[in-house]
Amino acid sequence: MKKTLGWILAVLLVLAIGGTLLYKFYLPQLIAKAVVTEGEPPAYVPKVVERQISRYKVPLSNAATDIVKSMHASDVTMGQVFEAIDKTEPQHIQMAFDELQTANVKTPDDAFNIFKKHVNADFDVEVLREPFTKNVNMKMIRVATKKAHQYNEDAVDADLAKAIIKNILLQKEKELAQNDTSK
Image (cartoon, rainbow, N blue to C red; front, side, top):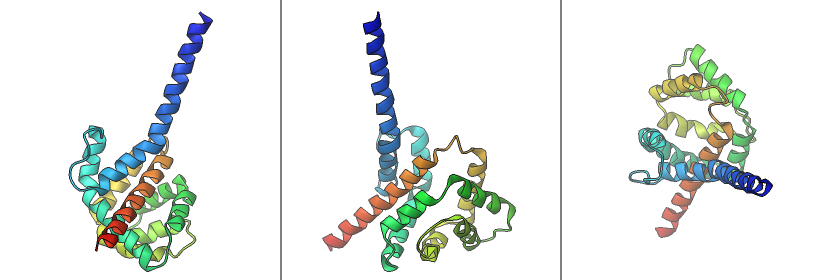
């Protein structure tokens, strides 16, 4: 009896560790790759995620391309951007969305000004203004604001969202580097 219980607990522990690794490491890479690659997302992407990817794939991919190009042109490193992502607390993002909802935001430029106040970065965030305003429209801002208020912090894992953003930028940087070497 004790041996069977020990085996069951060991299997459950292995499954829990595997699930955590899948969620924290593999899922962000999977989503990022689906966003930046052309064509349909792979069949193993969950349908709920696939619908969201399909809806925002082109603007996210274009924005990531422009962000990476802007970073390179301004000598901002990927490490600096990742540090800013890691240092920005979920409550600061929520405060930005709260401000977006109450402020008289008419343009993506206005929205960028609000987000800029809530981001903790060691570089001039202004280098990201052009990619943001070029690739984000007011409808996207309204949808994001609405979704941010639908979900509480517990429903959306901030670490997962950060990992997805980082992976999208990494994938895009690799893609751009490959395009530069193939020319």
